[in-house]
Image (cartoon, rainbow, N blue to C red; front, side, top):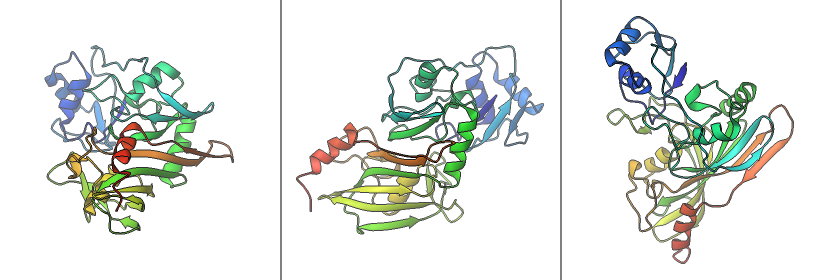
Length: 304
């Protein structure tokens, strides 16, 4: 079994994490299995106390006769924007996890995909991430690519790695952004004292976001953001670093604005990519979601 850690499940001990996956196995048995080398993290054995980090790869066989935590298909409506025999592009709503975690195994996009596509999903990233090539934060909505088989998964993953697609977001930022356009090139890494967060740090990974102002309001700015790289929380970190965090993004310092919403007002609204195994270019764009429209409607008569 393969599990890949992200910011929703990192910063906990390896033995605690595996105890959450196995519902009826003692933590002492989990620890024994780790010590005996039955659990591999990033190709190496680790101690039970190892603190998991974003993008850690955990590999292990069934550690006991006990039943593993199951990810069940659920009849959850999903909006399919485009699809062919190899992939689909989904409009993920705000508030939905992209994939399950040991603590949340239902109501995610993967649960919905398993009901819709059954076994016709890639499994390169493990059972918890069937079909998932890239992800959106829980409270970020918009376009998300899904792979229906492993060959397509590898194609899409390489396309993302080599920056051979265009991905754009719409966001409302707190305050009046000082420039009409800006290329933000600040390295991003995990926060040293708050590991559930990312931050701009000299030892971080190269990260580039292109920001363009669309409209200005009295105390907010409507912007388009193009991702050149795809780091965890990249847009939220870059805009926060510039002292203009995404509207209502309480994790990165925005606080709650005049218009109350469920966390950050951020939407992946545009994708352009080459259709797998074809020269055809697919270009997709969606309209603002309800959260974005709510804030835009409030500010439309309050422009500077």
